[in-house]
Length: 182
Image (cartoon, rainbow, N blue to C red; front, side, top):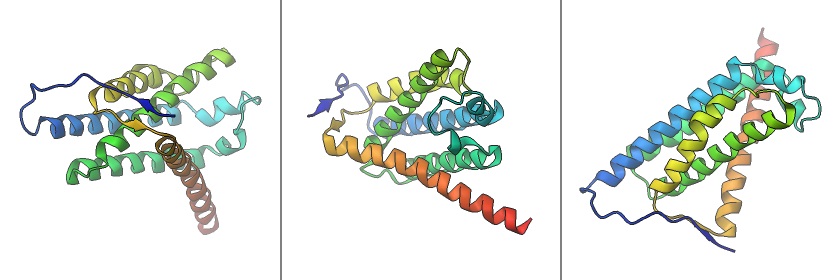
């Protein structure tokens, strides 16, 4: 099964405009992730989740300091991807940015759904609606089409889950190490 995301062909761009536009999209994406993760942290995502015991994965969000570290690690990973993509112009840049854009839209939609189901605004809802959903849509429309094959979807999903799980695992280890030292 293949899903092809298409955008209209553009021939009116000067040379180098494609890289410049892609750099702008990476910058906007990195900024959106910073702002969204800051909102989740400052509005106490762990407290909100604790108030909604029916949510899955509740145990992952228990310690506010550990969750803040997870958010920082994910943010640094996106900033690192953006820096490498803009600085070195790798062939994978557009595809990875498209995958990140899809993850942004899923995240933003998740905040909307959980806020509606709980009748309580979830931390990250405002930036999810105001930044993640429109930016994810813009990025998806601006980039060249990505061939969404089953292997591409699988790899993108594994990368997103791996990044998140890795951030949670690393945050747990670092929190435990800091706790022993202190």
